[in-house]
Structures are given as C-alpha cells and as structure tokens.
Image 1 (cartoon, rainbow, N blue to C red):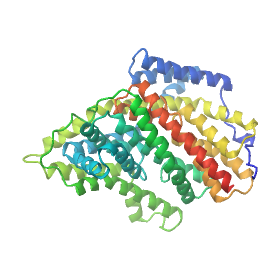
Image 2: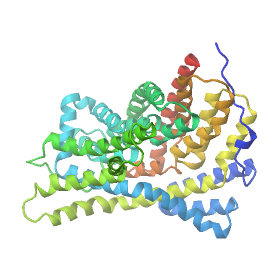
Image 3: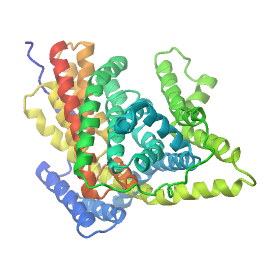
Image 4: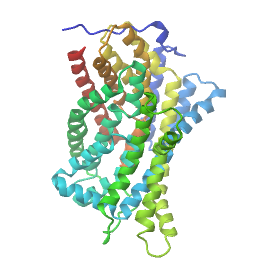
Length: 473
C-alpha cells in the first residue's frame, strides 16, 4: 500500500498566539466549564450567561479595555446579520404553513407514503432532499411545522421525529456543496467542487442512515418523551378546507429552487459560462440569496394561504400570524447572537490556531491532520464553516508540498476536513442554541442528543473518506 503523505506545514502558516498554548487551553476549558455551570446549575438565562462568560474570557486572554466592546459587538452583529432574517422569515413561513392546514396536508402525504411506523424516516428523507441546497438553520425552521404536526398526530415524543430530520440537515450542511464549508475548503485546497460533491454524497448517504437517522432514533428512545413546544404558536385546530398539496409543496420548494439558482449562477460565473456582471444574472443571484428567497416565499405564502383564503379584511389575520411567529423566536435570535459572541472571543484569543500549530511537530497522514485541525478549530470557536475554512487554509501548503495528489484524493481530504468541522457542536455554536431552543431542549439534553449526533456524523464521515482516500491515493 502506498505510504500516506504526512503533515509538514511551513513555519509561516502557524498562527501567532498572544499567550502560550497551555494558558490559552486553560482559559478555554475554564470558560466552557463556567458557561455550563451558569446555565445548568445556576439556571441563569443562556443569553446573559454567554455574554458574561465571553466578557470574562476576553479579559483573561488579554483583550484591552479599548478593544473589548468591539470584540463583543462585532461577532454579535455578524451572527445576527446571518441568522436573524433567516429565523424571522422562516418562522413566519412555517407558522403560515401550519395555521393554514398546510403542515397537516404535507404530513398526511408523508405518512400515507411511508406509513405511521416509518414517519421518522419520511421526515428524515424529506430533510435530506430539502437540505441539499438550503442551509441547516433555514431548512430546519421551514420543516419545523411539519415535524410538529407529525409528532402531534402520530405521538411518541417530539425527538423521535425532530432528531432524524435534524441529523439529515446536519449531514448535508456539513459535507455537500453548495454549502459554504465544503465549497470554501475545496477552493482553498484546490479540489474540484464536482468531485467534492460526489465524495460528499458517497460518504454522506451511509453516514446519514447510520449516524443521522438510526442513532437519532436510539437517542430519542433513551430520552424522556417531550411534548411539542408552541414556539410557532399553539397547535391549530383541524382545518376543514386545507390548501392543496401542490400549493404547499411549491411554497416549501420555492426557497430551495431560488437558493439553488443562486449557487448555480455563481458557479457558472466562476467558470466564465455566464458573463461576470450580466444584469439578468445579478438580479437572479440577488433574489436567490437565502434571506431574499425566504422573504419572497413568505410573502407569497401570505397571499396564497392567508389573503386568498380569508373571509373579510385580511390585514388583522396577517398581523396575528406574524406576531404569533416572531414573538417566541426573539429569545432564540438573541441567544444565537450571544453564541456568536462566545465563538468570536475564542477565535480572537488564537486558541485554535495555537493548538493546531502544535500538530506540526507530529508526523501524521495529511487527511488525519486536516481532520484533527478542523476538530480543534470547531471546539475552540464554534462555527463549522470557520473551522473548515481555517483548517483548509492551514492544510493547503502541506497538501501542495506533499507532491501530486489525484483529484479524487484532494476531494477526500476536503471531505475529511469538513467532517472534522461538524463534530462536537456545543455551547459556543450558534446552531446548537438554534436547534435546542426550537425543540425546547435543556442544555444537558441538547449535549446528550444533538452534540452526540453531530460528533457521530463527523467521525463516521471522516472514517469513510479516509477509506476512500487510502484506495485512490
């Protein structure tokens, strides 16, 4: 068997840490422990806990008083800029689909196709398809009313249906282009995006079934049954005149189509198949941005499912459904932004880069080094996209120095890197708070379910990508 290339990064790629690695590591461990203590033992609200611990961590890491506010506010605004509109538009779209009876129509079709006993599989397969072009947070929010409705109708506890769906979104978001992590890592390492897509699917489909679906069912069975929360409003009564299945399905697929159009046009521009700056392309790319796509879909849902189906003045009906959807998710948005603060502070300290540099002195296969560096970055700062992108940047010189890699081997390395970037989702990950709060999970339950699934997805997909790498390298 061909000897696997080993890691040998140039000294210039090592991030410069402000403090020694042991001190940075100790600060990170103490910060996470303090955060868990405040949330789980003191029962302080997660929003305040995250901000307090972030401030103390920044001070301990040597951030000056002059830079402290910017260190806190910057990541908060950046996270909210990415999440707030997605959560808001997605919650309203989901609430309209639910209150109009559309979620009952969709869930009825899924159950009729798969049967009640396989309802979790039906939701997981649907999420797998929805998760191909759309990000985890937006897709999961749009699927929530369907998950809620199936859980209420079939019974068995919310997690029996929510975890398999979340696991499917997680796999697609982590491994498969056009999601930002694998696309960015492929560009940095120099891998072909089409091959990354192929390897991501080869690795991701068995990973979804074992770690995203089967493991989710096991964890749901071991967790006390939880009621369906009323975050999107109380459960609607049976609608005697529900909308047509085709209308509801089209509304749910529309944001996916628009987002996929955005990604496709950007890819064609990058290959010069579509002229850069063409007015028609720029307009289509704009409306295919995730927030704009969700806004268009939500406005269309207001018209088709509220205005056209409402007797008398419809203004009050729209206002009520929007208020019912937005009021409960305000807390989720703030917690998600605070999670971005914590991740941003940990990144500013240089913890991830300093720990990654310690791997340079250890000879190990390139694919294993890329995975481990991504894991370290993920644990240190929370964002899977940042972890994958940073690890790819650290690995790119080593990959180039290792000699000729086959295109398929490069794709395997990229998938291994983004697999490491999805592991160990915990309290500094905004997605952790988004999913846990929408499902009404305590921090402890989220750590024992969502975190376990994310870690299993990462490790299994890495193992499969390494097997494929050993064959083609």
